[in-house]
Image (cartoon, rainbow, N blue to C red):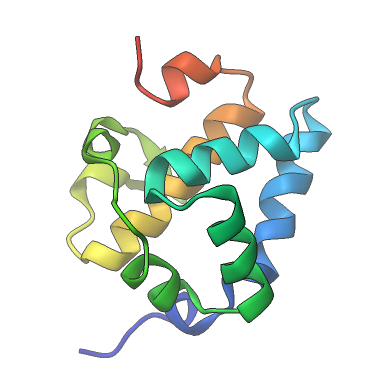
Length: 117
């Protein structure tokens, strides 16, 4: 199976775009990090190490300590595709993160983004 181009992109090259998107809407880097940590199980230190190592998205998700089971509750459309219908597991993980950052930028409360309510 041929992987998508994004799989080999470094996570650290996309991460600043997540932050910029959130900050343009009055949200913070800390909130973006909270989403990523919730989703992947990384600690803040481990996240920073992954960014410093410039791992690609495939490695980023393969090395994630514990993918949050509640991520399956993330639903909706991102890039014109319903995240819950994406069949390729890695692409679905990437889109979960995209969708959650998008929800943050749209002003949703963290409790709802993290599916704690």
